[in-house]
Image (cartoon, rainbow, N blue to C red):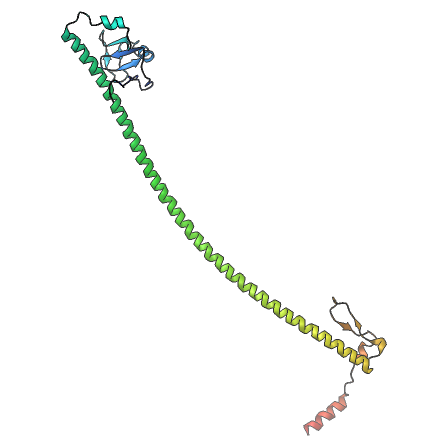
Length: 245
């Protein structure tokens, strides 16, 4: 940083504003804005806020103008010995060198501090990344486990579906057999009617499709249609004895 491009800043850590106009300069090579210098150095004894140095001397702190008039610049060093002028100039340059170095050191400190914060943030980011990676791996394992469970459920579903289809096929087969039996019974009933074994007025009355049976006999002929004569007890016993002989 060149001195020609350097701008003095208020050395108060609360201010740090660019200086212009009137400023307060201390013997310890610190400079303050007019507002903060008036507040700090109005007290006795005066203490430098930057380095806590005691400013008890008459010229240890004074108020000056950074951009003096041409008349002031023409007369301020008039009459002084060249050695005195060079000494004053040397001390003025030392002041500027000190201010530049202080600002450079402050910038380096802030840069180092920012670098430490960056490293801390990078470390935190790495830890968070590792943590997220572990969580991601756990979620991947859980997803894989859930996929296995899903495949197992699919397999069981296919088995149940296959069983259901098999039951439906069996049901359709049994339904076909039932329909064929109903048709056979119907044909038999027609044959009985045609042979005269069942009177026309006692013919079976056919039910609607939702009935439990395809047809039923009339109540007045139900007993006669299914009745058969059983042999008497004596005849049954004689028949058994003949067989035994």
